[in-house]
Image (cartoon, rainbow, N blue to C red; front, side, top):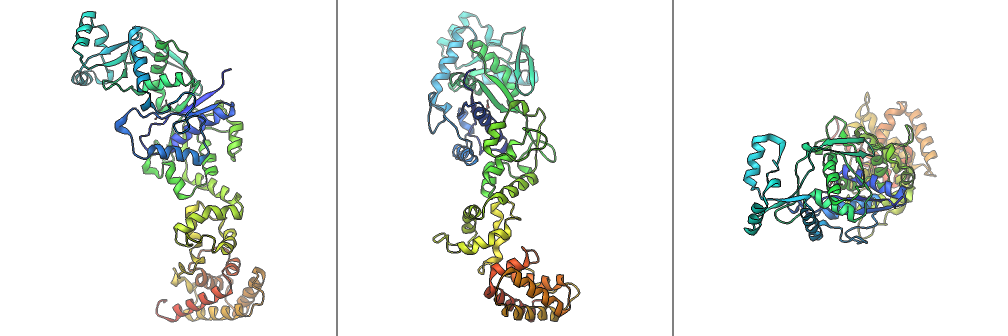
Length: 489
Ligand code: GLU
């Protein structure tokens, strides 16, 4: 068998979408699984739709995910260039070649006529008028240098069949296929021409792409036939739906890979999750690192049915991967977010390293994505600390005086602690609960709110240990002053 060559061929008309990344991932996995090549080709011939920054975003997002190409616009390769806008003459020559072999023709119909046809015939499209021009007429039009496009002459009274690797046999009647445009009047190719010419010249033998292109494939097959080329194998991957139904779109939440990168999703978790949108090894295995995906990926295991994108499931995966990181790895990962949140200074990022290494085990379990770090660590940093829930300092069924008493006794008990270990702190506070006569939940709630600012926090005793005696004492004093002032009821 020939060496497998696949490609991802995005148009830089927007930032990379989850669906685009899934298509790229499947093409990449298939190539790697077969020890083949994965090519990145940029389809940028529709100049009016190009979005600034999209090309960089696509390449950066793929690299972030570990989807690395062997040939592409930035690194070149044996079939350079890989930007279609730099290959214009190649397409023009190929269109011309088809006109000469009688497989395509020049069409001089004006946009007004085409518009009229569309209104009269609905979606039927072009009436193939210029296909039957007499030689004289063609000659006089050419001499007059009338603007024209080049259209493919669809062989009528026939049908076009191809086998989709995922969906099986697909047959289309040729009479339902328009004599579609190959080359536009400005000399730029259409998607169909450029795509087919490049896939052929770049020796792509597996075209793996989104389902939305399946209706174009019979046209492509006809174009391959016109050139007398063998067409590659095709695999159209099913669409990604939102949980609420309908195609996943902005109104459901983030859809661009960039948004997930910025929020601090881990690339290995993201890739694991994306791979399962339409592919599975069996009904039970869920965790796959990239090398395992490469090992197991098989087009036969890609579903025909559409897959459903669940943000909750992604968060769950991400949480699981965050928990798999070592403390040191997680430290490196959260550092940029701590800097961004103003918790540590950019100029001296490791200033609180020891303290942060102590904090991490306390929050690792609860962190969903790295950008969420702020909500978990703010109270560890004096500069950001405040009692956010002053009312919660007084537990249900107790009075302000009771809360004052709890805190005063806590301060005394903590002061007396010789060893500031979690065990000693726990023993000391449990002893305090007994002597004071309130319920543990009530006592611990007041202490928790006083030292962490809110009623939700990691384990109380470990948090006290990490905060350290001085910080705990000064927070208790602060809470006491709040209670004694008019701020609490
Ligand atoms: N340029 C097309 C896109 O943006 C490529 C489709 C294909 O893979 O053939 O998705």
